[in-house]
Length: 145
Image (cartoon, rainbow, N blue to C red; front, side, top):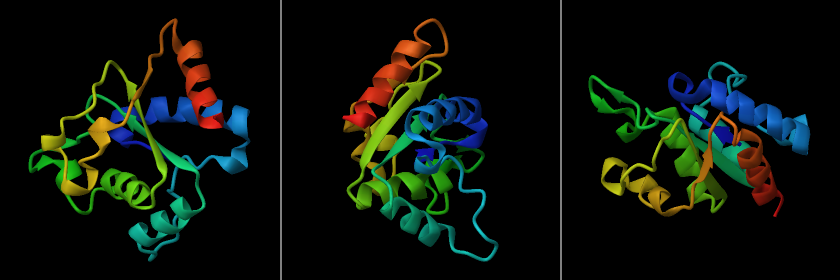
């Protein structure tokens, strides 16, 4: 399950999806939940979908916290990224943060209670320069392991 914030890391998430699709098969990678039927509770759909997954890739870009005029979007109970990552953590899935664009893991103080453990997870770097292939190969190998 690839979790990402569209306005922050859509291109990177799509690149990860393409690499994973080639490595694991299209039917084994969930990239976008935009196909949720109208009227279906997003939280329940994510929970059901994640229950069939081995893990979640949290693509963390420069604006992953999602700052807006009301503060950090990640603090909102209705933030889709928060719902996805928190659900995966509650289910005990392996959550692998992937840092793009020179991003760093957020401080625990900047996160809501249900994401407090996220900054302590070992994150994988992924740059789109000359090290891209090596970083992607290492990420795929880690998932296979």
